[in-house]
Image 1: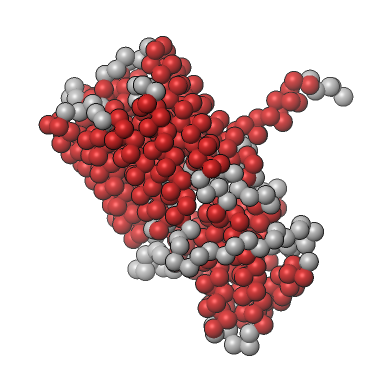
Image 2: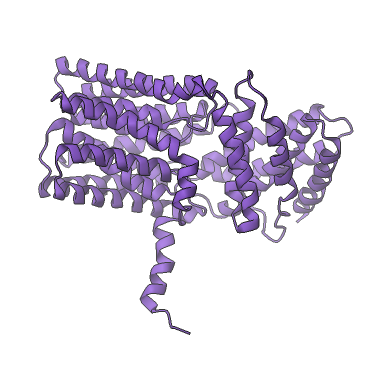
Amino acid sequence: MRAVPASSSLLRRTVPHLFGERPPALDALWAAHGRRALSAAACVAGPLALFVLLDRPDLGAAAALGGFTAVYGHALPYRRRGVVSAGVGAALTVAVAVGGWAGPHLQLLALTLGLLGAAATAATAVWHVGPPGPLMAVLVAGSASALGASPAVLGQHVAAAAGSAAFSWLVVMLAWTWDPAGPERRAVAAAEAAVAAPARGGRPDPVERAVRVAHVAVAGGSRRRASLRPRLDRVEDSFLRALPAMDLTAPAAQPGPPARAGTPLWLPTAARIGLGAWAAGALAAALGLHSPYWAATAAVAVLLGTDARHTGARALHRVTGTLLGTVVTAALFRLDPPTGVTVALIGGMLVCVELLVVNQYVLAVSLITPVSLSLVHLGSGTASGADLITIRLGETVVGIVVGLAAGLLLFPHTGSRRLPAAVASTVECALAAAAAARPGGPADRELRHALVAQHDVATAARAELFAAPGSDAGLRRSRQVADLGWALLGTRAREEDALAAWVAARVQHDLGSASRT
């Protein structure tokens, strides 16, 4: 047998820690995300190319910032996506306005970016907007500040961003005219493929996510089309029967403090991101760096992203992605391609971002960085020499350091410390619902409330850069409890008496045994 060199073996062990797990094959990525990738690239690169041809690259950059509206809400049914896309477009237009207004005053800009980051975090949590979350609000406002518009020109930039956001809304909603149930159908098809994947060696977490996305899509989809509910029922039944038993050997974490009544769990996350963005921008401005906005953006990029399967890998993954993005930008600036080539590269990189963002946060961040900085480079007309590359690296390092400090010092364990208590409460409610004589009664309502509360706590725990010890096991247990709890409620709601009885017995066996360990 041929010996494997020690350096090659070390590399194979190191790469997953730095970059996360290998993404799916290209054909699978394209089948799942190709439509969203092309629409996002068209909405950003299209307006940019138009204004570049009109010899107004500054307006092109502002319009491209508004075009980022298209990256949100692809998995949502059209009824909900129309509302979400309109709200995102309005928010990004406001971000262009306030970023351009605060741009000449660096400390004011840092404060503005912090407030935007906190507000966007709260909004995306309350309205369940989804990826890429608050990052785009900070990135768009910061990029707009770097365009250096006078008050008269700023109005033109805002108008260009608003027009591009409206164009993006039309693009993402266009398919509704001939395929109003498209998002729901694609979500169900993805769930069918995911449920079949474990037999071929797939992981359970993506399967669970695909089934839940399909459930949400069908529940909120078009009511004027033939229902996809029977197909989804079959998918959910297959998923439920294939659920692995709970790992009773893993020790349960000790219950932590329960959430205070009236205190939303997204509040610490919003405060952490807002204060981190402000501190990074303020420190960069105090150090005399050229563009403090990029330090704030880098800090937010480090504080965001929950794709790492283990909490200990999150900080490393986010730092790797942010640094790698700056290196890619440096290489691009050193090549200094013609304007037309740069526009094409922006479109191509955005396609790659949309293909990768769900499965590979590190690589997605490494590509969104050169997209943003290239837009600013084209719009402001700054030279792309070695000095600019050095400045960008310095701003990135400041943002990373401040982001890590914010993750370590600002409400570091608010969600993860409350997770054991939330899971224990849900287990208690699930056992009571399984034993209830009458389905749909108070016990089922209590279980639903407990599942929603547990989801909020788990979301807050996944957002922590340095979660409390034992959080990996706690999050895994919360997913297993949620699967069984929602399965019980779902089968009862669909009046599938035989399957509901089977799930109730499974709840009593698995959760009852787990609560006694």
